Length: 253
Image (cartoon, rainbow, N blue to C red; front, side, top):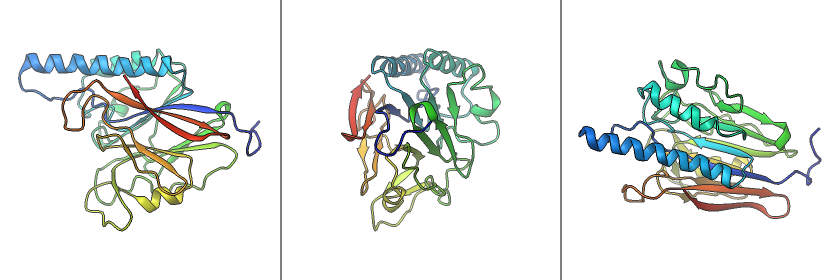
């Protein structure tokens, strides 16, 4: 049974995006192999952080994979890592791993045997409910990264009885700025959701884009510094409670 407004249980969430596993970053075979190994270790450390911080929910806001051609070995690696968790995991396809023909999430039984792992698949948006956590997660799957695609379009009204978390993958535009890129996310759209937290991906630097009473962040690409160099990596931890509101912390991996 859902708790009354004002008595929701505290919630702890880990938010990452733009891991880009399987990236073909180097032409040299040796450099490429080393890069792939670093990427695997990074994702293992992210899963370690989920476990160490005792989070209730793990959100991956797009581009977990760098492209839809990643080998089955990489997909198997991700499935094995996520199988270490018992917390719910929600994955939003991004522009690199979009739900196109032969998408990585379609050509493999990605969630088979892992009922705690959920992939947002509906192109007009869908809600995934977690009654035991008093939380709902909404996202809109991307099929094509284009100007007409609006990641936060069709988001429903918030449910005041539960924590309401949204996910989006696209480029942020401040109020009054005209969108010129694909998959625009407008400041007014974030503000008007009224949701508790919007977990964003696509921009590779951790950025606070909160609007009005809605807290919204880009998690950043965890394996890279702001100038694109390989970095130690970081994710975001979000603690939500009735007493303290929504608190966002940078967490190293």
